[in-house]
Length: 172
Figure 1 (cartoon, rainbow, N blue to C red):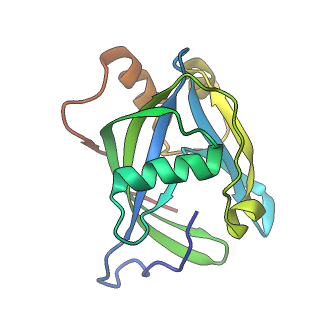
Figure 2 (cartoon, rainbow, N blue to C red):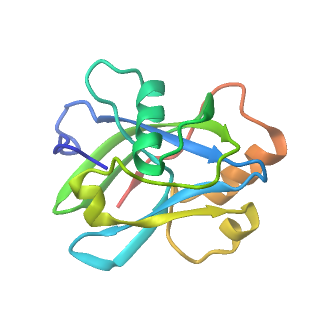
């Protein structure tokens, strides 16, 4: 989740750098975070763990740090960047403008223990859940990125792409 206000879209300033993790367990399930708008808990969605790059850390370092903070999972093998996406959305009374990189990671651990959540995350995260590809394809719940079910199926069928796939921008 965002620690500070990013630049407004169209401001000419650089979007917030974000690292996200497509975390798969030994059964090829993906771990997603269940989030909601703090002022309206009925407005909810699912998304991959991750968050903003801090200081001089690399995106890979940010991905591992955010994964540990949000899930308690540290025993992962971080793989390649699968996808890149620009998104802009309202959240907690502000507009977020982000440049997101999605890293593949594998773990044998499925127990989660989020212990490093920020104050904003504590107000806007309802929990975590492992999803099968079939469950993700069948859900009517909101999931980001919006094509995640299709992207996951392609990843499981074909393996990681040879270069990161640039996803269509998403603006809410």
